[in-house]
Length: 87
Image: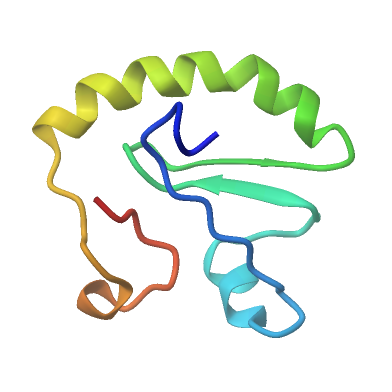
């Protein structure tokens, strides 16, 4: 998928990093957090794949227009979070 679309996917084990679940207010797993472009969106639950199939076309359409006008953080150390977009 990475070859087809301009995004980075990070898989986080919340058992090892529970502060991220708290930071993003996750109460159900599995969950997918889209942090950029804004607004942040979270999808979660057993039907994650079905939800993603419905939302991905919209996300891709908005990401193409937003990436050209939005400055993305190059690494997580600059902003203090481990879930930051990488250009």
